[in-house]
Length: 121
Image 1 (tube, rainbow, N blue to C red):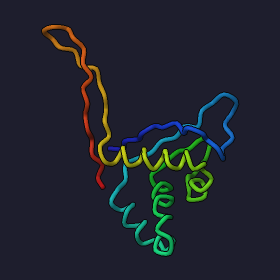
Image 2: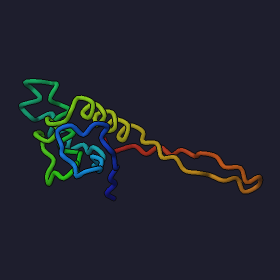
Image 3: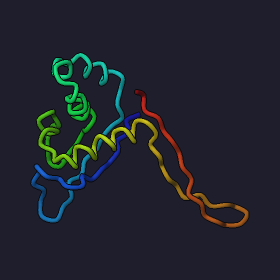
């Protein structure tokens, strides 16, 4: 099962979208093999701050018109966009909340139902 999560960057600095469009992208859940690869990367051993750059480059599947998301793509992001993606990644992988409208069969009242889905990692 492949699940992608869509997002829209708050600033989009570093990318040149067509007029009037937003910088959108998709992210997938972190897999255990992603974490293993990141921990084995020499750049992370030299500079632990590089952890999220490399991890984001693995889980962000599409960003604007970029054909392939790499660490260079992630390094181009404005600090606000980078922080947004780290927060979004953590939200998605730790307890993504899906809200759905639920209607009571007896009284016809509508409520917001929430589902939590945990990622593999």
